Structures are given as structure tokens and as C-alpha cells.
Image (cartoon, rainbow, N blue to C red; front, side):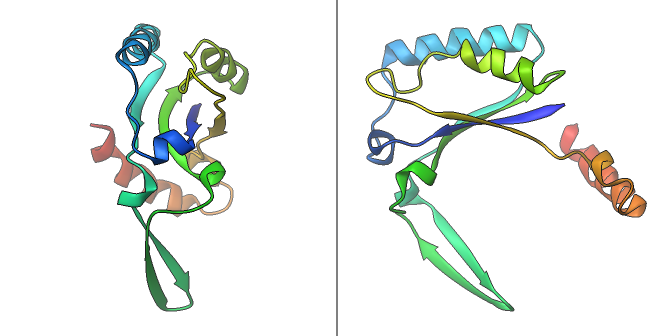
Length: 139
């Protein structure tokens, strides 16, 4: 099972405040532990929403909205992709994580990734197509 582990943005991260050397070192140790356990598939921090954009879809039209975005509690500051056996295992790994914003409160959300096999009953041909598309990405 794969899980996306989402670190919520804060006012500081949205202001472009970079992590301290101490936090970077603690996160580095945490990442090493995840890698040794075979859990970590990806990990990245994100620039503030002021450097991002959103594309709003309405029927056939597309509207581009440049950042920053105002609702900080709805923004993502970074993420990991874990490969684990259960949601409970993902939770246990997240509980071991250093606080991403050690001078304040942090929130990390855990969401299971939908796998192509999850669509097998709905559209078997779509699963085959997703598997073909995913093969080059995995390599």
C-alpha cells in the first residue's frame, strides 16, 4: 500500500522561511531511517504558493490563477510517499517524524494512494492502460 503523507503549510512556510540547519539534520536522519526500512518512495518540500498557480476548470474553459493563495490551512508545504503494509504502519512512521515546524504546531495528513488494481471491477481495460503508463515511471 502506498500513502501520501502531506505536511500542511504554515504562515512561516508561506512567507518562504526555510528550515533551520537543525531541522534539516533531524529530517535527514528520519529520511535515512525510512530508506533503510524500505518505506520511503519520495520526499519533497514545496515552495510557497506565491510561486505557484492553479488552473480552474469550468466546462471547456480554463482559468489560470496565480498564487499566493489565502487559506494557509488548505495548502501543502511538503510531502512523502510511503510504501507500507497498512495505514496503521504509516501512522507509526509519521509519529516518529520530527516536528516540521518545531517552533509551533504542525499537521500531517495521511492519505492512501489509489492503485490501478482498485479500478479492476470498474474498468479492467483502464487498469491495463494505467499499468502500461506506470511502468516507465517506476523505472
